[in-house]
Length: 219
Image 1: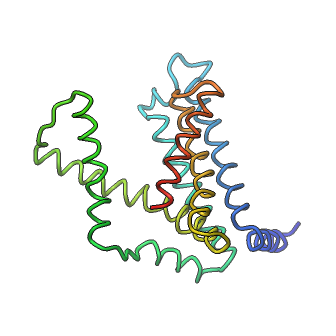
Image 2 (image 1 turned 120 degrees about the vertical axis):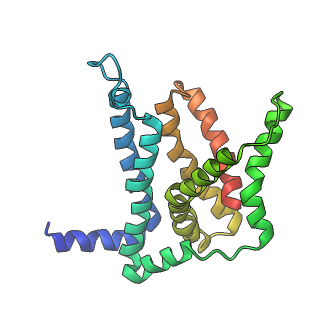
Image 3 (image 1 turned 90 degrees about the vertical axis):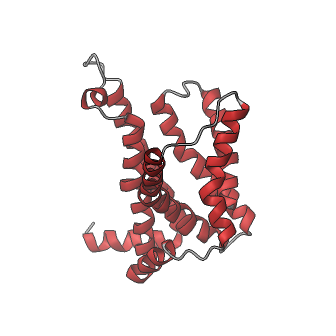
């Protein structure tokens, strides 16, 4: 098959079934990353895992690879196959078009830290004011995570996947359908971390991630 025929075939397939192509790309890539991460983590030859010898956290590295080289590029590729450069430019434009009132900004910035502190106090911890240095480090980490992880991740799920589902279904159903692969794609990280090692544990965590995913997708 020539390269021109291959491009035509991929383009036609992406235009007819964009979400299916997207899911095939990300889960195929994730499976490969999971296999490599587990081999590196549980090397039968080395006393320590390869990642430990390199001083790299396996879960963090796998998460970054899956997002930077899998999830977001898959959304860009299928978008390009569907609508060409104009569609890609529109996706990037929507990534930075934040039409949100002050109340939602305050909720996004302060809800999670406040709930975290409240739960910690309820569980017996003691609340204390952070130092200025610690506060700046946390703000820098938050901004870095937002632009490197959260923004491209939501560009794929909300900007690409859920938007297309909303063209066929109502908002709530689109959010639920998006939450299913959203939850599934996070399970490999729990396997790498060793958080689950049984089918029952994996199923329970999938349900918890699914509930969390629906809430996130609705927002």
